[in-house]
Length: 106
Image 1 (cartoon, helix red, strand yellow):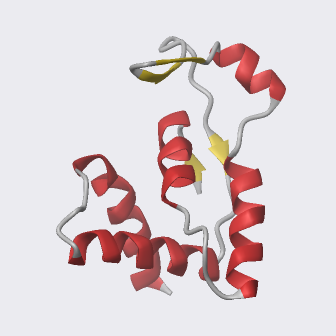
Image 2 (spheres, helix red, strand yellow):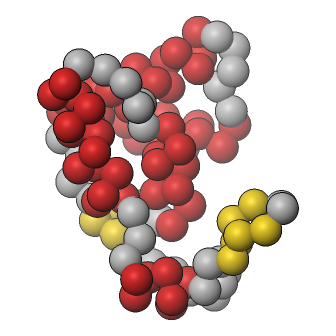
Image 3 (cartoon, one colour):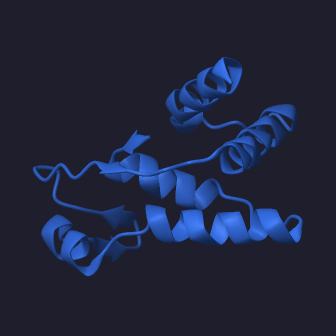
């Protein structure tokens, strides 16, 4: 799945920290894949302050990240939990649509 900087950050914040052992291992690998390399960090010029994380808006770095069935299902479960708790944020709608469409096709 091709992901933007913002999508990668949103997924990193969404990934479950707990689960069965295999899911936790899959999430660990996915976190590493979604994370940013030293070169990306330098190129994006990340700055963290009291308002949040910022980067150079003129730099576009998309990354192809392989997200398998188990990881996709875990992500959808996290999104569904937010939905059921009436805590689903607007900024996740585009990602939700992408993951739900992927799940429906499999």
